[in-house]
Amino acid sequence: MQDPFRFGDQFGPCKIVHVYQPEIGLKATAVVDNVAMGPSIGGLRIAEDVTTEECFRLARAMTLKNAAAGLPHGGGKSVMLGDPAMPIKDKETRVRCFAKALANLDEYIIGPDMGTDEQCMAWVRDEIGRAVGLPGELGGIPLDEIGATGWGVMHAADVAGEFCDLQLEGARVVVQGFGAVGQHAAYFMVQRGAVLVGASDSRGSVYNEDGLVIEALAALKRGGRSVADSTGGRTGNDPDAVIGMECDIWVPAARPDVIREDNVDRLRTRMVVQGANIPVTVGAEKILHERGVLSIPDFIANAGGVICAAVEYAGGGQASAFETIEHKIRDNTRQVLTNVRRKNMLPREAARAMAEARVRAAMATRRWSIF
Ligand code: NAD
Image 1 (cartoon, rainbow, N blue to C red):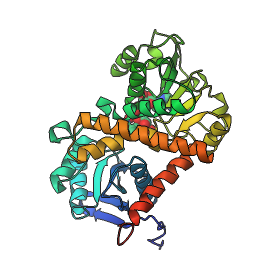
Image 2: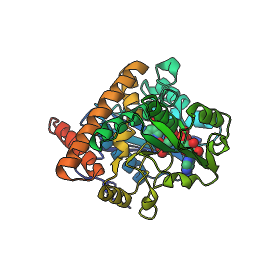
Image 3: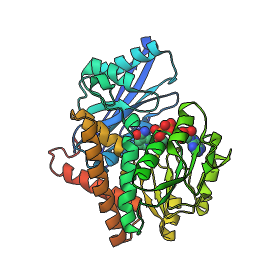
């Protein structure tokens, strides 16, 4: 048998709960990593192949992400084995049962993740009275609709510009992945005077050095088409063409590991602002740093979503979410990049050090440190 404490280190995880209910096919796990900063927030993921180890790693990522964002929340996560496209009735039964089983684990607040959505969070809240990522009728803030993460990406880019003499006004922007994050990041940057010159999605890309019309591209996406169907620029069916497009700010907002050591040399930009999660490998981040390209790590730049969830949990609305995201992401980006410059650290190392220092400071105030 594997050692159940094999993940344990100075930060956690403080609790791992396995939930099993054979009658309805429920097999799920919740990991509460570290709650020194406050009750943990983290999504419920449904997938065929999720493991306790993956759940722990995601929970730890949330501990650091919430701390880096400056939220009064620790990190947690949960996973449920199953097909995310299972019949809705089965999903409801399993999600409700899982939530009920966690009713007394009140240091964990469930949010949506892959395979779950606001409807699932409404079931969770109905069972145990707490969840984030709720439907609007229950006080939820529709973060993808309002562009919470894109709003934060824009502010990260704006502050980072102060560190490499680049202003949003007139900056050429390329966005990889024209979805919720990518479209809104582009929209808010263009509002500040930037020019969107390139965009891609899973089916292709489009480029126009004189600027693309965001609304026209968004309309294509809403109609189920691709940015490569645009008539507003030079198009192609290779989504990766976007990597070589010359610009000032390159925003990955699609998939993990899209920039690696074998293709990082194709990037022709002054700044990378990570909208997606882990879009740049550690090796590629090092190369960017050596080349003098500023790369703002995901858990600083794309924290708009978690900040929005925390504001929702505290009972705030959309306006307060935007204000909090702006304030926190600007402060955190400035703090991280100041340390990058002062200590010649990689941005990811500086961000991690900042997050860990905050968690340690909170742990020092607690009788049992991590919970
Ligand atoms: P989304 O599904 O709305 O959009 C993703 C877009 O990427 C789609 O247009 C898709 O066609 C495109 N895409 C997929 N593969 C591609 C490829 N190989 N090349 C180019 N484009 C490709 O998703 P989203 O909510 O915008 O999230 C994007 C990324 O940001 C994900 O990695 C997500 O985990 C991360 N993220 C999202 C949020 C949020 O608030 N939504 C917050 C933090 C991080």
